[in-house]
Image (cartoon, rainbow, N blue to C red; front, side):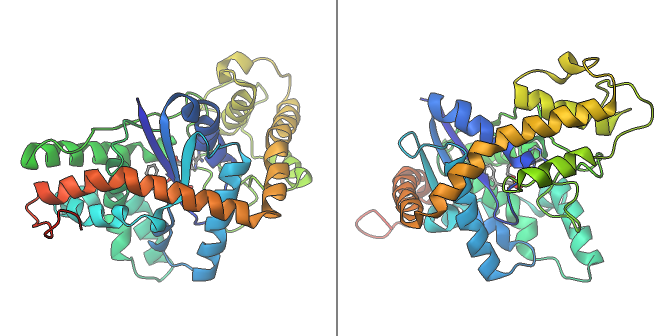
Length: 336
Ligand code: AMP
Ligand code: TRP
């Protein structure tokens, strides 16, 4: 059976980008057709300056939202990365397979390290090694597919390279995975700056729709979205990035292609109104379910505990095999 792994970092509140680029596909498609694991990758949230209490709060919120969006613990494992030691165990081995040049070439590292330095901060070493930990997340489970937004495809490529290299050097151990981005909305752009990705954090947040924003706030953000010169509503990502982003968001909400919607609107204003309503309706059940789940924190804890147990049992044999393959002496009795 196909195996799927994916994750979300608790570095901020989840956004419409997370939902359309990843979470929705996990809920609607992936968990029904494959053995799936979905993870709050909290160790990844420590790669930039962080507030410990906030990371803890956001981890719980991310897990709750994943369940609220419809991940079903009967169908998939939902868990927190730091609850399963195998990720960190395998990451070190993969650091001995990766080289520093390929890490420094990662686009996200280049962008984020510049940002950290500009802020006057130092760059954590873990920011450089982060894609190796991500590779460990995926390879530990023998995942075939990794449903992620477009910004993560380079990291999945690296994961493939590391898997192939390890297998060649030390014997076949890992499945070589592939990224499976959604067809529409694989890169949702910031509403105020439609040439940059909608990320979890931006000074003002005016261009970011958060999953837990009140409907009125969602409407306001979309109605104030930056559009392009001209008046025609056409899908052209290069020439009309603002309008194309709205078309893509609306198309994703309606399960259509953005080109199909080109020409369906007489003005930018009409497009904005339709998009705002579609997003409000899309997020309404998620917000409601989130509110219900917040009232039963014990239920979320129980799901995460069971998810981690299942994940541990799945990852352990592969990670142990990697230890043996690399020449480490296993303790007498066989298991670590
Ligand atoms: P992150 O928030 O960086 O942990 O991302 C979690 C998942 O959401 C990954 O699969 C990302 O590729 C996806 N994602 C994040 N932001 C966007 C975006 N603006 N558009 C599409 N997918 C996104
Ligand atoms: N790096 C991913 C992101 O920023 C999050 C992530 C960590 C992930 N480990 C993963 C995604 C494993 C898929 C599979 O979005």
